[in-house]
Length: 273
Image (cartoon, rainbow, N blue to C red; front, side, top):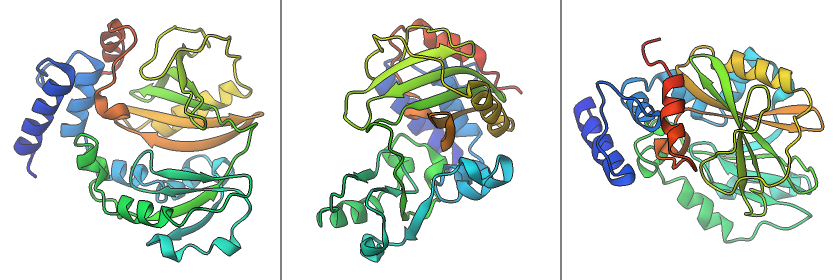
């Protein structure tokens, strides 16, 4: 697909999802600028870092292996997984997409039906499924089994929105393991900004995480070469784990709980840098 074809597809996809025309020459909104990045800033390094297996070597180079979860195996197909060699709890994932995973916890056996599920996942080119996120297009699909990080059956996510190499916002997310998702945006001083996109806002007070300054340092280092990236981290009792590098969150079609933030985040992102 050439640039003009891709531009047309992104243009109309954005119109149907957001109900307005995108201005590629002078985008103002954050959701518009994510579409611009899809079209004009999809580089080979983004493909490497969007691959949940290949990104690990880069993370080792940038911040060290101690921030990575263990991987027990990488497989071409589901039937290759040697379940007898795995620990009691783990996570089965694909490397080339989002939301393609299964938790095997508390000694549960992975149901045979997962074979068809995961082998079907491997057939999906996520670049086109998700809305022309072309960094996924050339990733070779694989299955991998990852360490399960247990923390009272919850694993909080800290999603650092980094603009031109500087983390400015953090989306705190909880409830993904029990489908009771809550998300709340904070600034870098851990002030609650009372907005999000997707899920409910937290009603309870969210404490500032341990080692928060270290998390900011990691996000700053990992984002330094990109106009925009969301650096996803976990923090369990002060132990920081790398999650993933997300270049086009929600494929740029997020609906903010307060629409004004589409422009506020857009103003944070300078496409000329």
